Length: 155
Image (cartoon, rainbow, N blue to C red):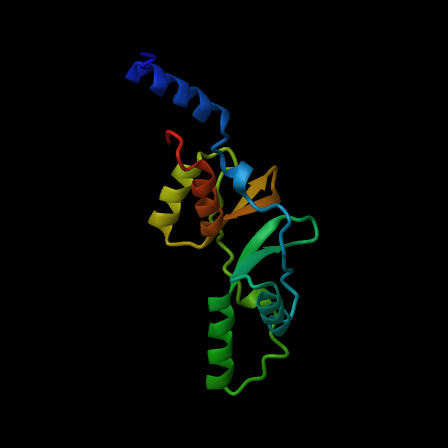
């Protein structure tokens, strides 16, 4: 009758799933919009709006990660500048970025990364190799990975 054993179908599906890559580095963004600490905060706000992003890594001249700047950091600056009646034109992001940045390993399994997003409540994680910024994984990247992998056995 041509009936396949249940075990046979599972084995075949597992082989397919093994060929699909599940690491962060396969789904991270490598073409990043980055900022430098001496950039004016208004310049960053314009870039966030223009590029429809919620934040980005701050790097030095050697492309080493030194911080992250987000919409929230910019909004805080807007609020403070109004409260203290100080113009924003003189403000650079070096003073307003988050300096202690949690990174993620590019070799990490995408599902472990999803768990890390849930635990940390972060929207993005930079990926650093040999001290240099090489990419960034966002919550949206994890969603894209899940959609590409749907129908597979997730391990």
